[in-house]
Length: 246
Ligand SMILES: NC(=O)C1=CN([C@@H]2O[C@H](COP(=O)(O)OP(=O)(O)OC[C@H]3O[C@@H](n4cnc5c(N)ncnc54)[C@H](O)[C@@H]3O)[C@@H](O)[C@H]2O)[C@H](O)CC1
Ligand SMILES: [K+]
Image 1 (tube, rainbow, N blue to C red):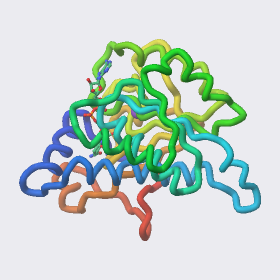
Image 2 (cartoon, rainbow, N blue to C red):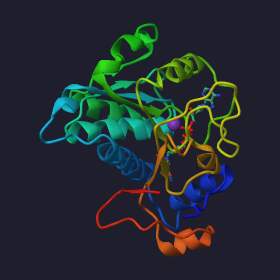
Image 3 (tube, helix red, strand yellow):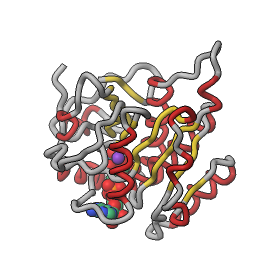
Image 4 (cartoon, rainbow, N blue to C red):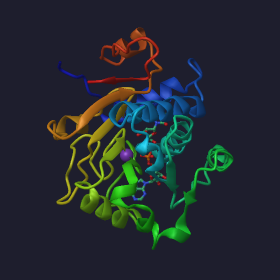
């Protein structure tokens, strides 16, 4: 199947229109559906087996960045908890821009999801043991990332590159550090085991290693007419699914 992709510029335009005066979605609504779909993709790739419940004892290590990609990660962590997983969230740079990020953090507290922050910049790796971790959720940067990466994120990404053969990485929308349009442009780069593209894949998704990376689409919130207006066909999600493997 050939997959339509949209550029970073068009992706930003799509977001703007979805949240504009005519359609009127709020960012919180879209983020909730985006994060929910990421959590659902994880249940598909790393299912908790009824006979073997060992995954319930392991952690899903979510790394949340300062923007909306990070917000998707915070939401995904909450749903993962409700789905029976054990998320731990590392949120090194908390956004002050939108008050609802604080609410997302309060909700994680409410669900007793452990949260690491800036104070843990030196020891976050202590919580990331191969034998105890189902996967790492890379919700660091999405389509607004502009290189070069500022601290502490470059160090974090370097560690993820070292770990990725031992612990699978799940990237939300864009593998962090990749150019949205040109893909991996740095010498060392993350190669996720699972990529969840939101709304519509961005051009960088064509650079994934197809033997290694499962690719899902999520963020099921647009109509056929809306997709066609932006030059692509909507995805054939089944029934009540929030994700589709493509
Ligand atoms: N319609 C949808 O599909 C939806 C997608 N969502 C998610 O939102 C992100 C895009 O979010 P945005 O806030 O625009 O950007 P990012 O999260 O990618 O990053 C912005 C954030 O990062 C900082 N930053 C940028 N470059 C650097 C750098 N080089 N070093 C350090 N920090 C950097 C910047 O200052 C900001 O703080 C999209 O990909 C989806 O994941 C939404 O959830 C809604 C619906
Ligand atoms: K990401």
